Length: 238
Image 1 (cartoon, rainbow, N blue to C red):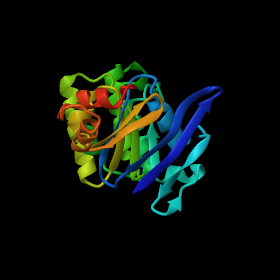
Image 2: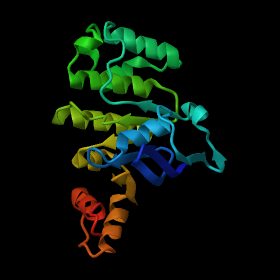
Image 3: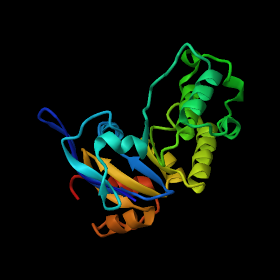
């Protein structure tokens, strides 16, 4: 289990993350849910080593994992990037396969329906097509925990469901997935547990049942609707 404790990030006088704490369990799909500006991307960038944090720690069991060595445990897949835009999808996947150690490409190409895209240049892909290619690259990495920022952005309903099934299948094989998701229905469909982030603070962590119980303890009716639970737990009046 990885445990994030009191992770804090400041931009001048602005506090982007304030003492953020939660756990990542082996083999789970953990959803990071929050509105735009809540600190989701900043959290992933601090965990992935893109940004230095101003406080807090990440531990693997009893061992503190320094920022410089987190790459061996965590692979961060950002949103909105287009690596190697002049290269074909086939080239990018084979490069990733060779760089990360030779995982079998065929199942991932099939799962993410990349066959028709193999000879297209990455820079010419649509947003949704590029997202599926990036997810394939992320799934080829050997790190036990994959951080994926907005994995469903740009996908239509059918593609979202197919990608969700693919991610669940990889989790069932032992990969741990930590997904930053803006659309709460998508998170409810794919995730085992959730971290609710608002205003740079964790407002709740747990399964839907656990979060619903937390909301009920604050006077809200019990609900199996993740959106309703999120609204209750992130309401500044509670």
